[in-house]
Length: 455
Image (cartoon, rainbow, N blue to C red; front, side, top):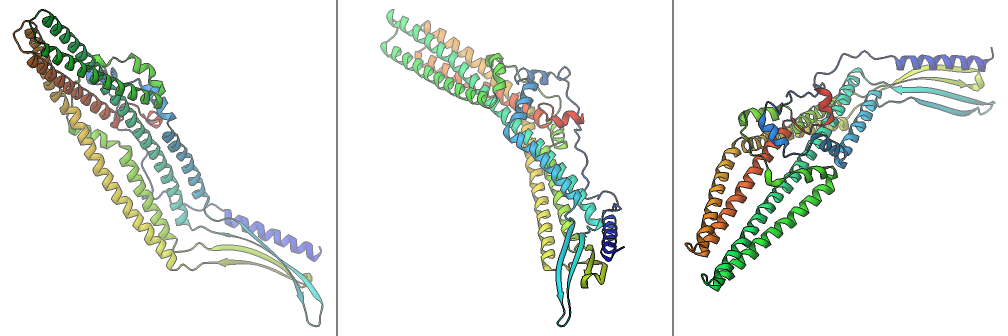
């Protein structure tokens, strides 16, 4: 065998040995307890509308579940959050692969002796950094945390989009209800005007009363037209953002909204439900664990990863052949310590933000739960008052037609009845919206696809 062939054979053997040494699987010690995150589960069973009449009444007001979920999935912000899950999967794969890659080095040089011959010499080396076992385990935990955070971010974005849809739906419904109430009042004012005109023609009323009745009719017409314009604007915006609601908008009769029902459980039970499975809170807690893992990883990075390599050289024209293995180890300094301090501070920021999120979510849950559970009593009082005021207004109008009551008092009675009716309508919709929001926050309707897989 020639010297060149022997050199190449030994070089191949060294390269193969290096490859085997650097690609042997590391002995993982199991998942880090700090990096583990429990699988996302929904602790609440679905409420059966047949067993919960108040849930069934809400379904008469809300759009169907299937088209709503299809629309939510098509929302740009939801699609962006869903794409973030794919980004997290890529980051997980990157963390599993590690930061190090194979490096091939080669060199060619010429040696010249002052009084002797010239020699062409060559060198070839193969090296790679070795990730320490503790870092590898932490990286694997960080990869799982990436998936968990991105999944929860998607679910939280879905939930916020559902809240926006619910608010837009009730904003339109509230204005549609007001528009119909004001339309009825405009018709009553027109009827009152005709009564006044007949009495004027019969000589039983002064011209001044006709002017008052005309002004009241014009005011009622203007209020109705303004409300109708707001309704059309809100409906157009709703259907522009959620076109699949067209059928629901056309089929729903705002004049025949169901009466709110009392909740079978108190506010505390519903707050417990909401906090037991809250996307925003779970996301904040997952971000805390992610930040703590990053701080742990920064602490491990204070001990730099070594690099191992093999080299082979051919010197003095092949007269000398060199084979060897080498190890290089960077010495960590102030920069690595500063990185750890930054990561620790960021972990503390994440913990503080999680505490703020828990406080805010809990406060909002209590507010919605109280409105949903206690608002029904207030609505019944307002509804009763509105019915009594409407009866009083009808009697006042009748008394005026018989000449037993001044027109001003009849008109004032009608205005008070209108205010009472609008207040009762607003209270009704406030209760229906808060109860719907309670179902939404407790993941009893319009849930993301991941919840279907978990149940």
